[in-house]
Image (cartoon, rainbow, N blue to C red; front, side, top):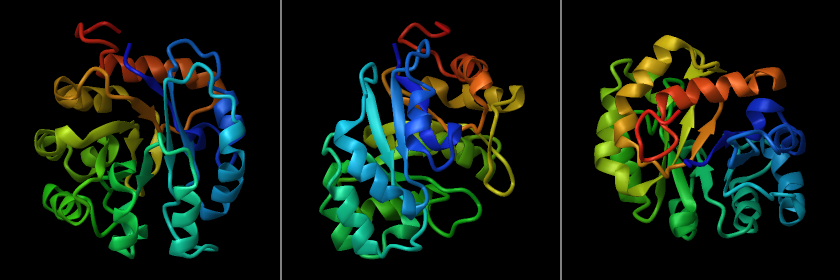
Length: 236
């Protein structure tokens, strides 16, 4: 079955322990992204990383801070580098101020395409430039960001065609005009169905929809309707 789960930050903003606990034992959840979107969250995550109960999770990644605030770039880098080496590090291009530093992560670094609030990583050309700068980096396709940039999903399809060999995981949610991550509604699901055949069935899906604990199962069902869970299309 395709690994699927939530970003801890979507379920419990700023509390990765609760975001992890809310998913533990949930039917079909086999993946998790440990979120440190605000740099003040990174230290506690790094301190707890090697003692976390991750039983039942086949895939674990970590989301780097989206902005530099209380920590400098090198401090963020050094803390991320200290995490278990098998965890992909999902990063927004705007924190990568010193390319030579981040290139040392090699394929641990996973670049995410951006929404319309950002200045890099939004389009095929901008992502191509980033991968030229970070030739070993892998790719996190945020289908919600891609749909916000281009509702036809042509940008997402072209990214999958060109960067599919780098694909590490998907971020899945509906993304609003201000970048807010929302429940996957029917019209968004239909858009995602356009790109689903290009996504390898084993690629992990990380749900970023901000939902309550009571809505976890419903959101999983909505995502599975767009993205089949196995090589047999329509298995959801």
